Length: 273
Image (cartoon, rainbow, N blue to C red; front, side, top):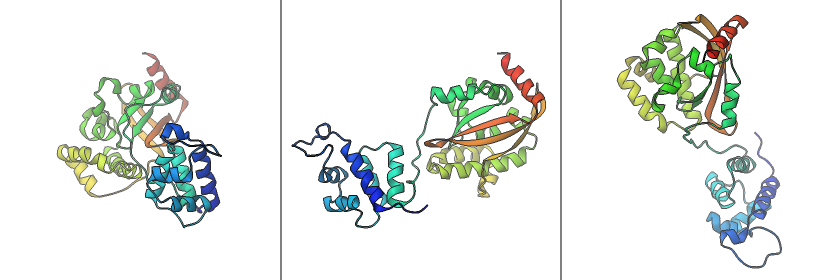
């Protein structure tokens, strides 16, 4: 990605400081223009007024990530604005900052619920399942009856005999999942957050410990999944993974039946209530 022209950064900075109310931030005095003065932004960011002025004027070279983070805080930027600031200043988004999350928005849940024949899940970067639809409940398992800390894909795969028995080729799936889990955690900046889970799984599952030690990394974009379901029988699903806009720590997985007959059977099973 090419670095944007310095004037783009300067225009953005001037625009954002012009939107702030000085009185709300403890500054007073008569002003010819709305917003904060350059020296006031510099004071809030704990940087040199001259250096901040140079940034707005397109001088002084590329700022460091630390300086951009200070300026983002000083200008009270939201996450989308902070990302845009980094793209303008450095030609790339900022490093990912992992955020744990307990649930999803009502809008996202309604999206899941609208997929009546397609099991769909929202997972975190640590592969905890935090939202699902009715189709996922009948095809995979009823997540609602489990404690939140047990709703983890790796715990299901390595510690739950019933889930393991549904898998058509458990060994291949387990190897793939461990590699994709490692990649997801690193991408979302959650490497330190998975340590406790990894230690736990290594203690209770020699198979996980062996696979984790191989250090494989896999993508998790799309593929097929074969299951042996107690009511639906042998079924094959295609899956696709999507990122949730503005939330690199969340991933949406949608499973779709490869034929209309299987989709109808899933829909009928889900409709039983």
